[in-house]
Length: 249
Image (cartoon, rainbow, N blue to C red; front, top):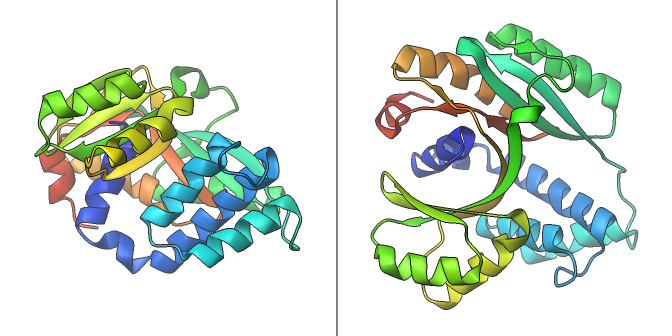
């Protein structure tokens, strides 16, 4: 699993996500609104919107709140015009980071992202410095208590590319466009889905095998994640699950 995706999953299990539920709701609603603006308000015809709506539902965002976000995106209700920007940078130990942002003020957000990098021990990079090594992928996790054959039968038939064991979960990877179909197939088969989203996955991973090195990288990731305009932080770090679980939030 992509480094930040694994960290997000562990944070959720430790209950940290509940501390920032209001902020998480705001980010998810913004993602739904932008997906509707860019591809239309019908989830059946807009795969990106379908994925964002499901993600919002998975995180208990009320249905009427999601519906209003879609209407703002399509222009039925007045809303803010958000701009999508990706910033590139580095965390300690040469870890590459991509920061996906939705903002209504490019200059303000750019200055704030640069400050966060500097204050947390990272550095902002020029466009293109690290993006070349990342590719968007669909990532789904299901509990490892489900038999491998059952997961493979359903996921591969629905379009998954690979399934690997990662601690107490199965990681399913796929093309972004196949994410929704695989999620639906797993649901129909009665297989619990712990998470399903797209992420930027790097072809080159940096192994962080000590708690000190891992904590230094996650300090930058967490500081960026905490910004209201930041929708996702993707990194090419690989931290063993036992080290991730030992780090204090």
